[in-house]
Image 1: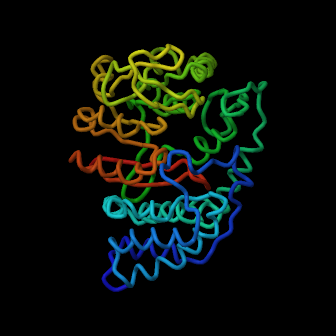
Image 2: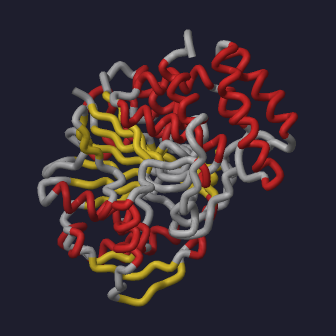
Length: 395
């Protein structure tokens, strides 16, 4: 591929790799996601349309030789799935191909860049035909361990059809009893989803850290973060969904030595780029998300917002050491509302980067444009579309 950039060579190599048929959804927790959610635009309806749209997009961004290598295999794969509507338009991936290349070049190590092109290929081929990083023996062993965990208390129904049981997390290094799903044990205890340890960068919570847990959900991450930060640390848990807060409060009450004494403080507002706006949210349990602004919304479907910069001022925080965000597509808005905090304290970041298709390239670019000097890393913590995490650490 003479004349092609490193990014296009890497992406073409991934698209042209040998077909892969994996376990896909058979051994994942919960039902398969509808991949149309969050991705605007029409799905492909014919191979002819696939090829026409792909040629139009690719023709503007790639040389002829690269275009001719990409197109046949990509169009063939996309076309084979078109009738089921199970994957996105190939052309949609290339609509922001230049932005993807810029974001890919911002990543600090080869592992992150490999994850990036695999995730782009995932959008083209679907989960059945792209081997994601976790699909290895270790992952399936950990999956089996989490699935086999015996609850220590009765389960209650939760949103999305989930059953929330009581689990003892001491076998995993946390002296906690929490109500959650077995998937939480896999993600947070075994995979350490919001932790990164690589030769070029480390993102972890240290003793004494002040942590903002954006999208604290049922509270298991807030308790784990508090355990890591220790008695001299502090966790500000931000969560605003009523039924989720019921479980959050139960989990705090179950673990007073970890949550009490100001070690975990709850803020029941929605993180946003400005404070004191009224926002509508779609109540979907831990997957609830902001869907618009309103001055006349009912209390049942609305919450007020808070920016991280204002939160830091209102709570009188002397610094912020770590920010985690899993807030269902509001990550960019929350980062915009944290500009002062990011520039002043340069906290470590663990940000969900999958709720909107553009998050994959928009979030790295925003952090780079801040001029803080963040090193950026990418990882993916599932064998399906969810759980991409962008990590950032300043020098």
